[in-house]
Length: 404
Image 1 (cartoon, rainbow, N blue to C red):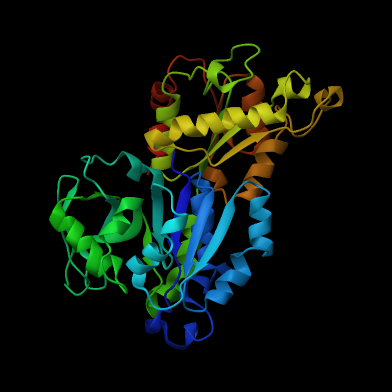
Image 2 (image 1 turned 60 degrees about the horizontal axis):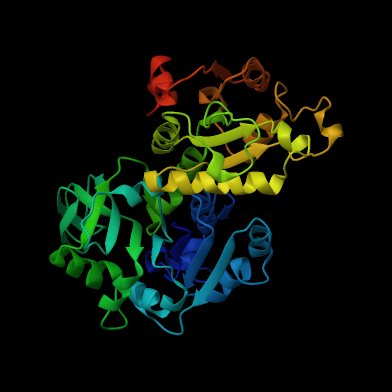
């Protein structure tokens, strides 16, 4: 299972001039917070829990914010998410930085540039068709002018040519997000070395580089004009519609007494539905009253294991859940009227307050009238699902019209 994200945060960003005299480019403020925070949050959204930050220029700034003992890293550690800052001893280049951190890398990991944001379903790269010889899977994007970026040519999913920056005109570029085999590092023969200029062209020539084009929003903050528009860009990208999915009888068959992951039976079309909304840029929230926990029939720990198992079942399909929401109270007192329990709206409203949700395009799918009542109380639309196929249901009621 993919658990690790590696983010390249070593660059200064000379084209930004005095803006990076005292702060590394990935820590420049965007919308009142460092740009790097958006990348870390996005990795966590996709279920990645081990995050490596490869730092060089002003590495102490990165370490102060996200290193061992920092407030940010400590908060995430309590949620089971671990951040490690790895400082480069000298200029190594982007490929050299990977070689320096090899001892901490998983067999497979997600790699992202620290100065760009590509708003697509990162886990979809896991299912890009590739031969057994693949070393890297690359997220690609069409642009009107390739001169700032590396130009990519491909035949089907295999990348046949990878050029450095400089060629003007429209084309397909490297979007700066990758799935990487650790064995790639064995191909790094010299240091310093550039991933884009030295390594990827060689892999393309060998036929071990694959890619997929995503028609989603993209920004690279490495030049002044794009940095100046990044506030507006990130505010639009980070605010998105959401779908709330009831768990029992919508995502999984509601077998009485289910306490373990191996007892779960998915509803037909449930995982494909989640993937569909992931690809469309929706937040996906799973909401459950969890009466059995409230009655002490089994623990919240059991539920955490079940949700972890569900995440493991979804990832090979390139799918994920942004947040599993449930009432945490236990014992008979928790069965009393609470605004956290459906048909009340508390659980939904708390979730929407935590995330930047576009409420006008948000909806819920449940199997009971209390689900629809909770949606209405939260000011969103609710849809009643009676089976048997969740994917067919979303099509039959016209929800695909929302997917853009």
